[in-house]
Image 1 (cartoon, one colour):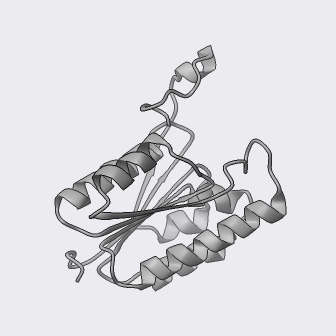
Image 2 (image 1 turned 30 degrees about the vertical axis):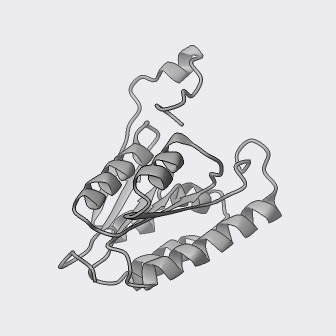
Length: 176
């Protein structure tokens, strides 16, 4: 049974760091309120720090799935990557429609749409099919205008300065 009297649609987008981190903060808050959470990651695989934390520390409150090859940006294979995104979309859609979750976070779904692995109509469909008492969150760069128009909250993360440009690679526990 959902704990929210009314759910909303949130979008975290932009070129700055912090979109997934913001969504994970919301996941932590929801878990602390004893809400049931579904966290689906597009374009990611493996044992990242956030995946490990969700699985090891919040497994009773959070269902976490990854649907990606992990090579969508570095070694793209259009057929494989589209198949991963479509399969993930169907899993996410089923989770959203189940009514089992108070919060559904779809991490990097905006990037999957931007790259053409999904189409904007897929995201709009999720928004339309969202149960009234379920909060839905999309993250990723390049949010489509139609998604932003339909969302209830849109936050754009803007990069002002980032150490990546000085050659600092992604660090375990901070960026991955």
